[in-house]
Amino acid sequence: MASINTNASAMTALQTLNTISKNMATTQSRISTGLRVAEASDNAAYWSIATSMKSDNKALSSVQDALGLGAGKLDTAYTGINEVIETVDKIKQKLVSARGASQEDQQKIQTEIEALQEHITSVVGNSNYAGSNILQDGTDVNIVSSYNRNGTTVSIDQITITGTDVQVLSEDGSAGIVSGIVASTFFDAGTAVVDDATIDTALGTVETALASLAEQASVLGAAKSRVDLQKDFVSKLSDAIDRGVGQLVDADMNEESARLSALQVQQQLGVQALSIANQNTQNILSLFR
Image (cartoon, rainbow, N blue to C red; front, side, top):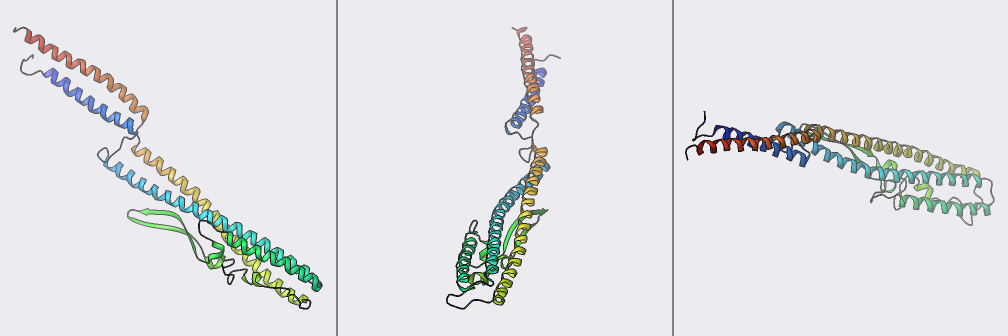
């Protein structure tokens, strides 16, 4: 029924056009942000899950930083302790060559050993990374390795290196695996020839130190390998969480682009329908002029 008081066709066309405009605004927002769930009002459940997972991923990013820092410390210490092992091994060779040697030769060997002792002190002192010297400090090293959340319960895992075990030489030289070797004067100037039995005792001390150094080098090496593995795992875990969050909140750009094109056509048709509805009313009114 045609009415001069109510233009039902125009009202229907206008409602349709408003719906199309609202859908276009939603689609354009998704295209511009790349998100189909940008805020809680879009989908409260997905938004809540995605927000929590994004927060966890930020924590994992901090874990990755901690592992990277820890890897640097361990790699530095591992390099340093291997250099010390090689140097102590050279001291061992010098002591072996001193067996049966003359007093003059033993004094020359002592000079060579002193140079090696100074090198050990230098190596340990320079095995410093980011203000931390595992081989010298004698303090425990705790490396954050994971962030675990179960609801509101959070736990942090750590990789721990016992400082007193891996201390090679304290800053003052009074403690550490090689403190006795570095402080020793095997062949005093002006003294008689050192006998083989005394040299063998010194060799026993060196062998004990070498065994301890090798053991702690293996501890550092194992910790270094574990940190590297954990770094790789945390990186993969972070990527997996990113993908999971994306599946919850990311917009399908191909789908949204196609929807926008369709809505643009619908909008054009809606404008035409509204125009026709209004024109029909004008035609009816013209009959009464």
